[in-house]
Length: 143
Image (cartoon, rainbow, N blue to C red; front, side):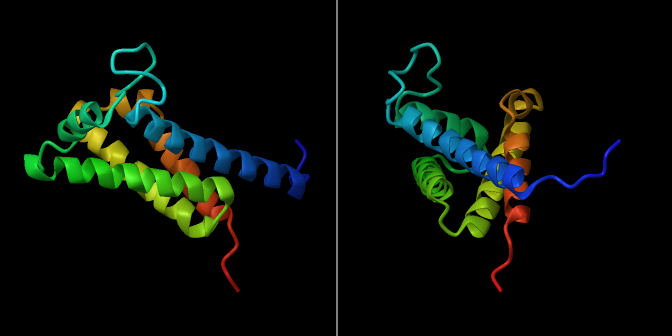
């Protein structure tokens, strides 16, 4: 078995690919909430509008008062939009990737508690969270 180090070019390509993949996943989820992938009920569409998404938010956050569900849904949407754009353009990548990992971890735990283990595992939410944490770890600290 070779102990030859991985080339910097390969690490850079892998890191950039990971950043773009996470960004597109966030932005695709946001697009779904605004109906850009199709209307509710269309094959492959999870929500299709904010009303359907907020019903899902209520299911995951069953412990929250109904009055705060729309705010929670919009806050999650704004966070995913900003984090997706930040990852896509590479802005403040260390902190954006950390925030992405934390958001995905919170989402995965909410899914786990509300829906059981199958949903977050099927949708690779914990894998995406760990990927974002790895992206955070790969970034050099500001000197």
